Image (tube, rainbow, N blue to C red; front, side, top):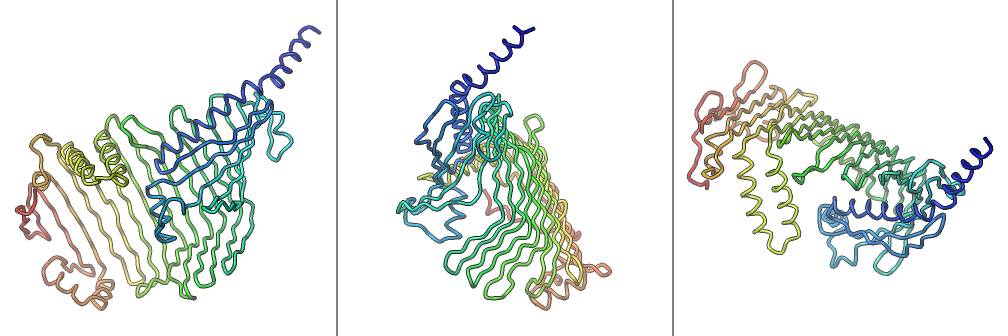
Length: 440
């Protein structure tokens, strides 16, 4: 019995004392793999590792994240104005302490330390480094755990606080963001909550009462990502010079993309409430969109060509390649439906629905003109009489739409019913010629 106890104690000592050096190397490699995977997935950042010092029980290192051409950079330029060179963009600096070992004993000396088995437990702080070398601390801390299989769980924690810089003041409520990634298969899960956020520069004030989001994603062999996402936003407002430009009490977004064999099915919904809109007052928007039976391989190629064209020296060549794949996508056949796109105003409603079905054809002799001949589509729009009168007051030229027979009054509603079958378009039962000559 004593020998068994001694054996267990020796084994435990080996796990606690010897494993950190071995596991530290694995944890270091796993974290680098996760960062490299994140950069590869976005395609818009470059991640480099520097100053990594590996110890017996813990290691410390620094990673630099630089922004490349893409949507993130475009959005930043839109908000901050044009930049003369990439050097003007700040670099995100991530400073990390990694406590390693199957049982990370050294992590117990810091906040949120844990003896949970794994390849490592880390804590990271963030800074922005500017062109002149100035470093600015970013509030909040990232706590990470590397699992036995190499998966990385990161948790960003931001306590309530505020910051002032000249006339600009920012304040925020408790914030938590959790991301779990597996660099081996590329799968990721994420969720987060921002309780409140406020930015005030003296003339422009942006406030957000609440933001929550959650989702997951899985890459596919076709180059597209499938999964779920859900976003809830509450009490968003934008005020400039004491004038409310945007007042959005609530917004909800959901999306789901699935792979069914070699076909993609997707559905997205949006529900938004807006207040104090100029000339409209309050408005509620409800939308449901779905994509059914799209060829996953061709859809992935179209998406990849469009992404590469953003930074290509000859984007037109890539756009032409994307157009060829897009033509093939339509030739393969799929459905695209706007199941609901409704506006609710104090005066009444505008409801609309559109369905498009593209029949499969031989791609060898398929052209854009063929698309019109093989597409079956229907569009239904209904506008309440009170809303129509409001539109006519604002835009008197809209009366031409009624006079031309595109909107027909039935009871208290103006309606449009359009259908296209085998190249024949009808609106409210009347045939409308389609000009094929200008299409190729």
